[in-house]
Length: 353
Ligand SMILES: NC(=O)c1ccc[n+]([C@@H]2O[C@H](COP(=O)([O-])OP(=O)(O)OC[C@H]3O[C@@H](n4cnc5c(N)ncnc54)[C@H](O)[C@@H]3O)[C@@H](O)[C@H]2O)c1
Image 1 (tube, helix red, strand yellow):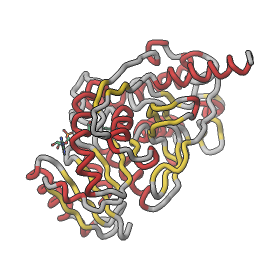
Image 2 (image 1 turned 30 degrees about the vertical axis):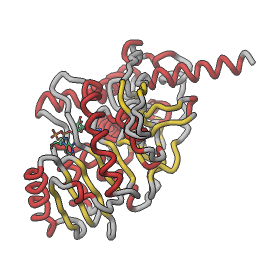
Image 3 (image 1 turned 180 degrees about the vertical axis):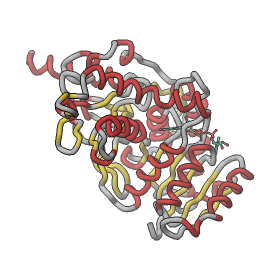
């Protein structure tokens, strides 16, 4: 994309893979890497720049330990922070990574006041709420990659089973980017065929058991990759580059990013992923997504999954950088449960006016 600057904060496994994917795909004309580890950021930028001859479009790559490299960015992707160790959940990272955000956001906003901010650092839903409060930016300009990666994992599994191209699978993971996320099977199709009606050799192959196993596999995917290689980086790099392109090209692409919701499904002040229209300037619209009886938020509790799977609730204490007086806040992370509870409440309200 000509005349577009992407700043990637954090030059670790995820940040460098995202920059690499963006370079290869021609997502931005200027890619800047910033990391507190200056020699690493400089070396990574140099290594990427050395390959720019072979990229889809010409791009300048810079990098270093001075936050000034982010100056004037159109999109800032934040990947800085602690990552999961084998056995750790994303939520275990919340305290450390909120503190990093508190340090990062004010100088970033000085350097890139007009940018759209995309959180990748985990737990990305919790950090989206924190970053939105720290920055004071409207939710459409500060959101997270949410379940874009998980959706890609889901589509890959379904495509492999059906023997079709992954681009012909239309299905989404929604909710928390984490252990309580869930697929929207009711809207899932292969081409125009509802997933549950898809046949092979005259048999319906996407049985309820198969779909439940697939959902579990998506939820467990990161743990499996981290156990084997210590990090997940390539698929999130590609997912992040796709989000950057949607923003810089004004694609108006429907992607399940995570924004702080205000009123949708009756939820406010919580960030979770729902299919959303992403284009220049950020998230244009979060789509009101129908859910049926078999899904959290539908009429059946927990969509047939074991209750504890969706029954987690937690709180995070953090500080608000602005206004000047630090403020305590509480971030709720029981979103899918909350979707269900709120919808159940609304139904009750409707039937008992
Ligand atoms: N949202 C997703 O789908 C998704 C997927 C994979 C990983 N992640 C998350 O991305 C984050 C990064 O993972 P990783 O594997 O790249 O970790 P990593 O340890 O390889 O890299 C993190 C980098 O952040 C840098 N950093 C730390 N504090 C900083 C600061 N204040 N300013 C600038 N840079 C700073 C470190 O020096 C390091 O280079 C983790 O939180 C991980 O859980 C999210």
